[in-house]
Amino acid sequence: MRNRDAFSGCHPAVSFLYFGLVLIFSMIFMHPVCLAISLLSAFAYSILLNGARAVRFNFLGLLPMMLLAAFINPAFSHEGETILTYLPSGNPLTLESIVYGFAAAAMLAGVICWFSCYNAVMTSDKFVYLFGRVIPALSLVLSMTLRFVPKFKAQIRTVSGAQRCVGRDVSDGGILQRARHGMTILSILVTWSMENAIETADSMRSRGYGLPGRTAFSIYRFERRDRRMLLALLACGGYLAAGAAMGGLRWRYYPTIRGAGANGFSVSLYAAYLALCLLPVFLDLREARQWRLAQNAEGGSHA
Image (tube, rainbow, N blue to C red; front, side):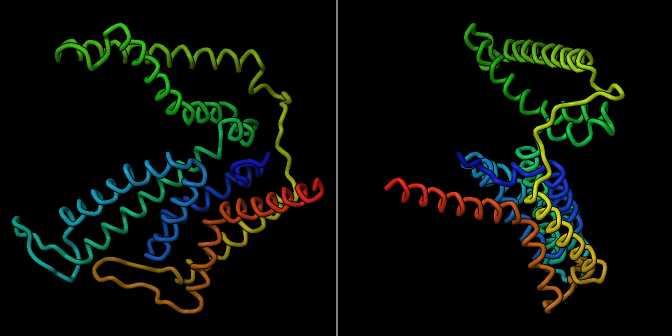
């Protein structure tokens, strides 16, 4: 049976390098074209990974946050030369502050969306595999931290459901009773999280985690596909870094909106950035096509 996401089956080093590149570039490339590529690619990949849940998160969570961030910036930042009007406080409302607000909102939403994709692909066992021998204690702490949020959310639902069955949920009773029930649920969750951390630490210690010379079983192998992906990531990342250093992606918002215009060099950088961001989607489409061809060939041989 074919995996749902082909990129998740790549070597952890390839996945970690990919997310490192797209996250760094998403935060430092403020060119409008780059922001649009990063945001739309992150949206597409998150939907590929999480389906309808990602659609709800993107449109019900990220979109309102983007609009809020975009409208907050002009209220506090009044830089820029193009004055559109004056606010009731007497401060100017500038075109540059509005555009920068939308750019900052797009950057923030793109980074959050990329992190949601990272959380789905880079599981805790992959992170421990990469850094377990180099920084065993820190890698274990980071792995537990990354796993803590989804496990905590699942435990909240479990505890709230159990408390609701006995009439002690936060929706039962008056204000004081609800607050008391909420404190009880919080106390249960804190106790559970501490016990879970202690049990995990004792389990890892009993298995010799972090001891010198300790061997570990690993299911990850660096295959030919991983080498091709690594070369593609290094080529795109190196070209984009060199292009940015040469000013091909330069853009500013204050005091006036200025940046690198559209020419052959900048268009090639946009294409490289698009290829980098959509690399997992291209890989999944390619393997889906190969899977369909294999299925058709198998059906033809049986016929």
